[in-house]
Image (cartoon, rainbow, N blue to C red):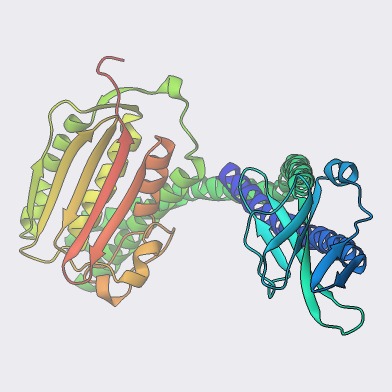
Length: 414
């Protein structure tokens, strides 16, 4: 149980921490990419303005005098393009040029593909009349930009993985340290429960014997005294059952596999059906069974008998006169399924999650009968979990409940 809690805490911690690291890494990447993009754009704008300043407009034509050497442009994966006011290409320098049509109203253009390129368009105005005489477009390859972002991604991803590994190791140590006092307290409480239940056995047995002894001689005691002794005996029986249940829960740890042997679940259920048939008939309840032959699993016979008897008793307890309690078994793959279904009073939807809690007692919707310790279903669930299985329940108020037991199957004779 505590191992599962530790794993749950550790997993929750790592998920939250990984989410925070992911958000932080994403924010860093977005800010870095935006800043790098702005730097490239500002650099291209500066180059474009410098190229535009060297252009002269004479006789209705552009006279281009570029101070940029083609070798330098090629080395920096850049290019220059000059256009007339109508957007027609006049001349270009460099190899990394945009093939997109000129869009004067869109200063920044990005061309995707095998070689991504970013371009910036700068207008050229006549120095005398300040009239628009053309455009210069500066472009640069984004290959280096993408490589920088890829390195950043690898760095952030690697950092997150290393941080999560170190955090996981630290989390294991911290959760173990944090859970240790709780485990020790639980073990002390468990030991106290076992000791108290064990010590209560003798006085309860003495009370029971002394209460039942006068009932064997009804002529020597009056009717009122007999009624009192009967009440004492009944209360003692209930207290004895409660202490036995508490002792079982306190001592029920995972049974080692070496102490298990192959059991025929069908045989166990057949014996239980015979055992509870008279009780069902006395309450006018139809107890029926549909059992698959020779279903085997590895386990403890006494504990599995207690598991199924608790479920059958629970079904009979909450089924009204004339109702039906049905037991079915199937095997699907490596799992054995046992279904105990009744047509009883059912369970309210808000109480479904509480039925396996210790000492939980149903409200008025399931209080047709009284008695019991409130530990039967809790014990059944613990036994199922100790055998690597699980019990689930479905119910509808007023129509009945269905308890499904899933247990690992085994090969006969193992």
